[in-house]
Image 1 (cartoon, rainbow, N blue to C red):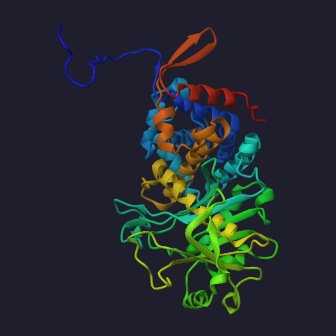
Image 2 (image 1 turned 120 degrees about the horizontal axis):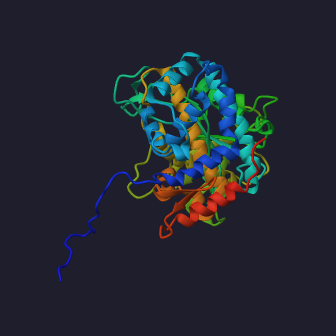
Image 3 (image 1 turned 45 degrees about the horizontal axis):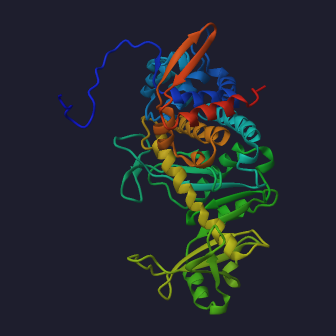
Length: 458
């Protein structure tokens, strides 16, 4: 008896298989598009760009590119992955058709971007209604995190410039709705900027905040129920004044730079005024305390602003800064939320770190590199990336439960979307059969059951 050699079994490969579908798990995204009404909304918004006797609808073309990005593509040509599976994605445009559409949308400037954003905003409202208790506004408040992203350019693209990290590329400013500890998040703003754009430019933060608010349901576009969070880049007089402007009344929690004036006030805080910081479970955070600053340090800021500082023992090996004191790392933020303990407010601000997870997901979904040359084209690409990220956030919110709701794009692709299947046609019905032995097949089938039970749009 001969024993087989090698660690893996030998497999004979033959072409020409029938009924085999790769990326079969991507039907989850296709059904999310269908139930949310995203296809109809984008098609209606891009009607002015449909040429007479055109075979492919511009909305379908743009959505196909977004689906390809959601499945791991990073350039326009990756739409070919969908073109190879017409039974799942329908007719898909050729590469030249896609390029011509992107050029046409880019040439129209803000008009096309506004149409795409309006469609996304309309659909977002419906998705949140469908999600019910799983929606990000289920607790009565919406949290929007603004943060900058460095995108490295490997060639000479328009508006690419040296960045503050001594790389070369672009510096978009993005906004994400936080889904809380039980979910991920969805993009609501993407402002493309040159690589040398300032981190604390108030005008850019105001523009990004406007874009983000326009994506929210109307009842959240002003008022205390909407919280804007930023790091210290947002801690400028102009931006905070804009957030607190009469008639806007937004809640905010923005990081602040430890200035010399703030540093001197911290040194004068008595030991009895420091309150232990807390963790998400309510337990005391070891080696961290918070205190509120008052007095002339608040001069020049909007009425109602509270300045809260935290001191914490630095991690082993961490280098202290000139603004730190007594061997403690100091951080500071401002908020206009009243009537809540400062330890609770500090925890809420610290959870802004979840925005880093959203940025990591965006880098894995088309934002690792801006593939086009001109800035106008890459602005359209940013909208495509946001649509892809929307789908990757909406599908788990509507269909997945437990820990699966927290899976990031790479894990969703590996476990769900890349599942292969067999398409069987019986009469007028088409059935997609998945491998029963695959560990995550039950996740796909259960998720599809939840999506199909949702009401159809319109």
